[in-house]
Image (cartoon, rainbow, N blue to C red):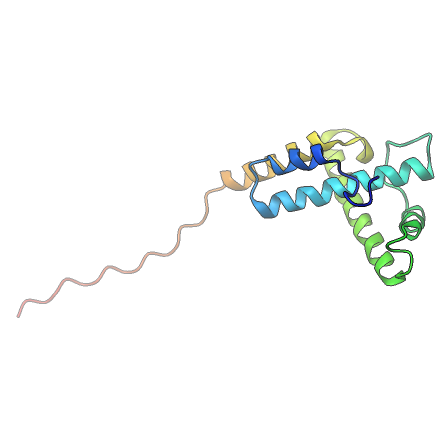
Length: 142
């Protein structure tokens, strides 16, 4: 993992940025991709023989977080970052269940497909029609 770029390589970032998703959804997608790659790296370190499957447990995740030089000195941030990785892990478990695979076997294409499907579903629902103002009564003849 390149500490300056994070777990995503430039080509992966470009792939995410090239989606036609709205900015907020693209940001969420990038966070999920970042979390997936990070959890895969943690799993590869903590259980090298099994890099797919469920996300690593909290102890393995926190241990990995505390090994990162930029974070090691800040226990409170390390705990919060670990909490966020756990939340992403739960989201990945839900997505993997929908896809019929394991959370850590997901890839960038899976995440993009899910995000696009979510956007399509949201756009397919007709938004509520705003209330219409009552028409003005016709002017009275003098």
